[in-house]
Length: 411
Image (cartoon, rainbow, N blue to C red; front, side):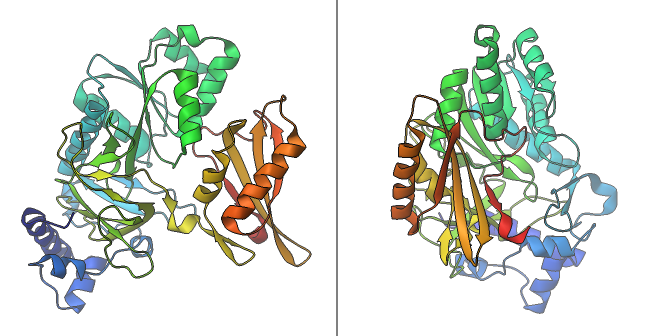
């Protein structure tokens, strides 16, 4: 799905704003002698923007609108360097609320629902994004924020919450706690809007079965408004994204050239109407594909497949490139294990070692299971991991995102 005439005109408006503000991207364009785009080819020759560019602009170098029009900032976590600070105008906040409300509507959520919001508030975009959409829709927000599982469950029961907004990790933790306490009949949840981390089929199935709710995958990132730029409909796991606000390309991360619809690659996003901090051809490093054709649900907005991972998820072990999604592909073929796993990589006696921890219940022969999993993983990635089978519930649960890969070689 290539950029259309309307979107090209919107990009030109964004280019004018970036050049006038003298932002990092405006300077890139000026140096390259670019003042606008007329064709698809012109657009696809524009330079990319990267997270490093955004960090270099710290603290307010991304601000493109006049300061008196900036009403809010949000920020990335900054766990791997300087945080990225994104300024928002009043219109940006309103546009974000509109997109998020569309997401709720796509999931069949109405103003009669009671929406319990468990992601964090503050500089992070998650909690406040879920709240914005809820208020725009007119539903009742229960703005819990993260943690305090005891109180989360109490409010869920007392307020008869119908929608849970959370990471997949926390949804699983809550599901397990509800089962342990035997309070499922006191829980009124019907839907879950899940975001912030990639999650596989096994985890999706467990949460769906244990909570008995319909699950929706919401997409977004701090640099591009936040969560709410896309969500799946009830026709499958592909997410409709709002192409009147953002334009998405999929590129080959090696050649950096756009790939045809249907092919897997890296998501690159251009904001079409953002004022506070517009971004053009921003490399997200998320891996997915455009789903071609029209959706049976009737929505005309294009579709993005589930996030398959990130280009920077990859770890090199024994000279082999390994993605967590490859391990998940193997593990989902073993119905006797839970959705939870952990990969630990260490360097011992001059060689890399990969230990893979999985959970199962006590009715299974641990030794036999570990050998079978090791054999299947070897056939997938080319070398044999050390597989450790542990009891259900042993691996850590998280109120935020679960850390699946721990590389001890650099600790």
